[in-house]
Every structure is written in structure tokens, then in C-alpha cells.
Amino acid sequence: MIRFQKVDKHYGKRTALDEVTMTFEKGKVYGILGPNGSGKSTLMKMAAGLVFPTSGEVIVNGEKAGRHSSKDVAFLASEGMLYPGFKIAQMIQYFASQYPDFSEQKAEELLEFLNLDPSQKISQLSKGQQGRLKLLLVLSRQAKVLLLDEPFIGLDPMVRDTIVKGLVSYIDFGEQTVIITTHEITEIEPILEEALMLEAGKIVASCNVETLREEYGISVLQWLKNNYKGDKNDRIG
Image (tube, one colour):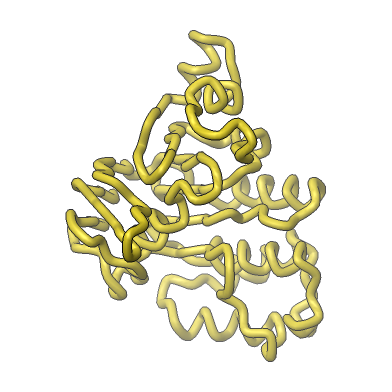
């Protein structure tokens, strides 16, 4: 469980998050949606214990979020995370040495599923291969919480489809809490249970995805566009 309680985050005069109060329940899959600059990545970094609130608090599994949260949280960052001088096998070995819950057996399965060559150097990987490797590293952990910040960024549709299939196959639904930020809403809608809309650092709307489809007959993307009040030129999906 992750709880945000009246969380503000300011970078100088810029407000990244504004009075965010939200509880992410165990075993659910959440989509955090909204335009660029809405605060999605800041929220994710706070849940991972990498960024601290200006005011308010973030609680992860009963403890205030901090560097120690990594024992419960596996974070797929939109930037960084990989060491270009390593080979894929060395990157896997490094993660295995850092996280007691890392499953080398699961990593071996994901290597085959994601079509990755363990002898290949990370500096030589395409964006799609790097995205698949990041997913492998995160999904190989038996973490209580999976945070996936823009897992599809810069990837072509075929790679995005592979990543979604990987999520379906390797997430422990009902046990792991999964939070995904993305612009590629259509791809992930089938696995979402709850969707939240961030705009200018505030949660301005939320919905249960199944209810949205069954009672209102609309997609998450249409719901998002219906609720978005900002600049219509912003990319929201």
C-alpha cells in the first residue's frame, strides 16, 4: 500500500505536486495519466523514495518513503537505470547482488521471452532493447510494488505490444501493486483497474476502468479527453 497525504512538491517557484492525497491499494494496477509536466514522474519518484515532499508525507507499506523503500519497490525509471559499459548479463548480475528478492530464474525466462542476448553490451542496444532490459530487471524482482515510469517512451508499436504481454505474463496480479505512467493509454488499458488524471500537479479525476467501460461505454482515452481542461495541443494520449 502507498499513501500520499496532502503532498506538495515545489522546485523553486514551480509547483510539481499540489495537495495530492491518494491511496494505492495492494494488488491493483493503476494508470497515472496526464500531459507532460503534470507531475507524473515526480509522483513516481516520491513513491520510490527518491524525491521528498516539500510538505505532507508519503507512506510505503507502513513506513515513510525513503531510500530504504527500495526493498519493497521496483522502479523502472524513464531515464538512466542502465550502465552503458555493462553487458546485459552483468546488468542482471548487478541487480541480483543489490536486491535479495531478485529472481535469476525469472530473469532467465524474461531473457528468452523478451529476445535479449545476455552477451550484448548495453551501449550497443537499441531503444527498444533497452526498454525490454529495464522491464526484465524490474519484473525479475518479487517486489510488493512495481513503479513503471513511461515504460513505452521512444518504442515502436511492436515493442510496446511485447512489453504489455510481458506485464500480463509476469506480474503477480492481486499481490503486487502496479503503478504505470504513460502516454500510450490504449496499449495498457486492458490491464488497468484504476486510472487517475494529473493536471498541473493535482489529481483532477479518477475512475474504475471496468465501470467506465461497462456503465458508460467509453475508453480510458476518451474519459481522459473528456476531463482534460488544459491546452488542447498538449499530448495526453
